[in-house]
Length: 570
Image 1: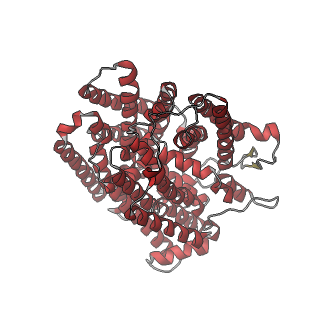
Image 2: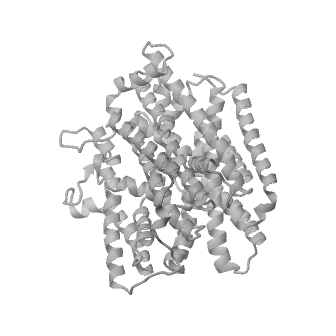
Image 3: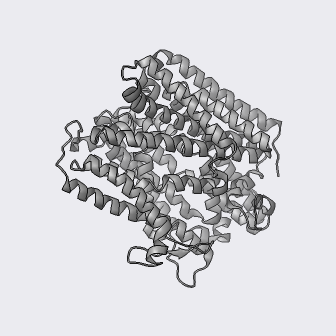
């Protein structure tokens, strides 16, 4: 097992200098424009399609993907790649149907869309909700999990963990205060480091497997050995459990419930995340339609690579653990002698040679800092444009709003540091993925219903939107927490299964689908029963959705690759 050495520190310092230097260069080059709000928050007209695509991926991939998805790769296998590959299709839908609606209506924030489409009450409610969610859940979890992952890699102490929190925050502040231009263009470097470092880790993991089984340093032989040694880890679709099904297979089904995942749940997760999320859509909202579409589709193509980077090392750790080669690493933090799946990525990093450990640290840092910077900028954008300008200082000038935006970034990161310092929210206890899903997944059905009906059915009313968000949240709690006890373990709507703790549970994706379906019904009935609305300020016409031959070619290639992957691993 390799340890962190001088060459690793030098590689990491080189990465830091390159990113920082490039950020300073972009900031100075565009300094005059950064006093304008649209430029600071959206980099209006400045980001190229490849910068938009890279920035989307850099903002999306963070410590919870590296640690959490590798852990799920260890315990579940390739089925978890559905999140990434369906995301690529979701990005196609967003590029073709969602982004034209935003750009045609000159939308710069998600609350602004809700105000344009519904009313100010809906916009204000959701603006405040998103601010709390982004600061107390997303920003805090990214910082906590990121610091924890780096601290584990360095083999550090609690004091070092706290130092890493401070350094990550300062690095993110340094990039974020320069505005979306600096974030967008430095994200190109960040995602390049992320992909190169991630692929290097995967390559080493496969060669380690190959050597362990006597095939020498042959990555392809290592991959074939993974399939041979863990065939159950290479199925995209899980079958419905029966009375004879083992607990591990039941737990897998609860996470990814076979074909039922593809009926609604996984689509709601991805379409809500990629199409109705300020943190993500902000990258494309300052571009023209063709540039935005190409950038989003480029991000979709990059998503096809993500399972290779963040999931395959987890399967490698599983095979090596079965062979008894990563026993100690997989048991770190264990309370019952069972392997801890979230340690899978750290276990694989232990096999990297000196130099590549530094590159992997740089890749992990790139993912964390890019996510922190993107989230902080989104918090700043929503607060400044949708709260400060509208309700606190209506006559605020451009320069004043940029200053407020920067102050908001600092305040948001300070709050997240305070909550991360002692794990106030219990992120570590719940597990990173569990924590994020718990606090964001419950609201997704209602929010997505509000957006999808608002975009494509002009009859939807503001009252229906408010009721829809509340209904979606309430139904998510009902199906996730209460339904099996109240209505029984099996009904015509669902089947609940006993999890590892002995508690009956409905698969999360099915809960989301049911909550979404009933929320849509409620919103449609309220809209039909209320006054007819036809928001004239909201523009929607068929010509918006036409695609160029180049965009169409990108779509066809992405769908072809996804089809081949599903045929291979069905």
